[in-house]
Length: 265
Ligand SMILES: NC(=O)c1ccc[n+]([C@@H]2O[C@H](COP(=O)([O-])OP(=O)(O)OC[C@H]3O[C@@H](n4cnc5c(N)ncnc54)[C@H](OP(=O)(O)O)[C@@H]3O)[C@@H](O)[C@H]2O)c1
Image 1: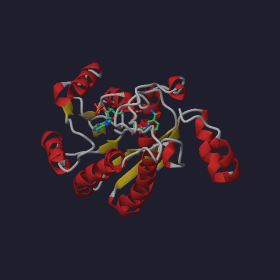
Image 2: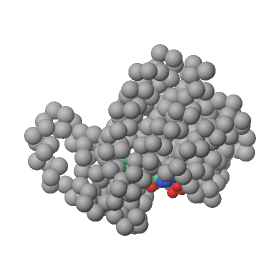
Image 3: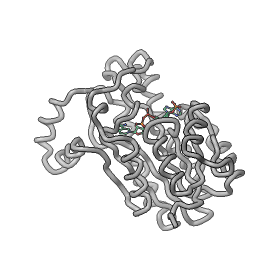
Image 4: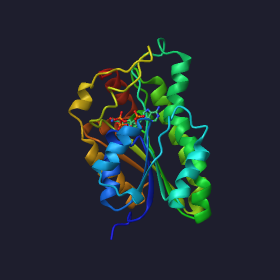
């Protein structure tokens, strides 16, 4: 029997890309799934396509830019399923704008969506996990959470911040049965570049070439599940682009040369 059978798994960013594929993979394993994102109709489509039965899923739409109601959202979930076993903080938005053209409002928005949403939702879910003495918080960061990159200043900063916060949280709660998995995808073929925010506040609206030819979200979701089930602390998912993380760590001068030559797209 699958280790995820009847486990309650909450996935943010479930309407598209990696989150959508996570819904499919978790559904195949018999999990009960909470699907969150802004677009309710898309969440319903994903739940239907994953063939989830009425009593096995819940749609909880909300905007990651405002998680002030996180406590109420968690109660909705607890009312239906009584517990939350795994929270996957996956929803996010990338960026394609230089520091000088990006307004403070946009910088704050990128932090709300990519950092504070995960912090607030996790803090609202944690009391229920700690009460049960078990649970897992998964955080979808990025390789951009390991080094800065062109046109990604606030996105990269928010992803870096996730590591500091959730690595600290891990130390504080692991003895009480709650674990933390950090996921660092490289390039995955989703709408992430299309949906990236520009300086104007509009969407980039283009599939970057590096994403067009990248690993599919299905394979990415399978690796995330593997990481969850094998109790990993941090995993990297993608293709040859992952090598740059090792180069930065072990050959920092070479990293400095290589990173300057990369296309922002
Ligand atoms: N694809 C990659 O190459 C890659 C690489 C590294 C990290 N990541 C990370 O992977 C995660 C998933 O992204 P993806 O690649 O699957 O991209 P995606 O296809 O654009 O999906 C993003 C998801 O996040 C949700 N979302 C975005 N803004 C939101 C908001 N303000 N409120 C609520 N939900 C919001 C979207 O739903 P709605 O639009 O319906 O709200 C959608 O379900 C993100 O955290 C991203 O940073 C992706």
